Image (cartoon, rainbow, N blue to C red; front, side, top):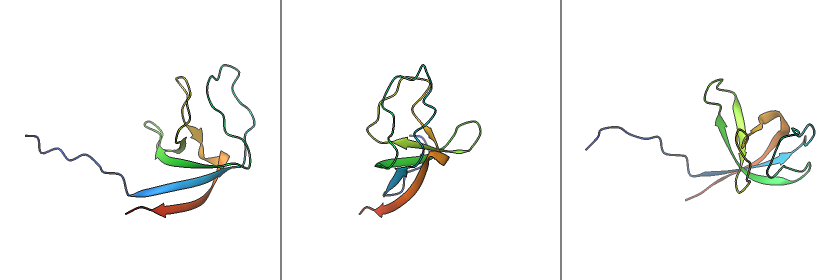
Length: 82
């Protein structure tokens, strides 16, 4: 058995409101957020840069997309789950 411990996510659900839905890439295929809408999200750091990225739960996007810049959203609420 391995002694490697994987990080476990916090029992937390984050919600954010889209404040900027402009500049959709021309080759983007998938769901795109609408300004003013509130979404269930996960904020994770980018693998290379470490900058926060917003992943909208339930959205579909073809690669290389799938995450949105944090400046497009404002945090609305954090709900602790138990």
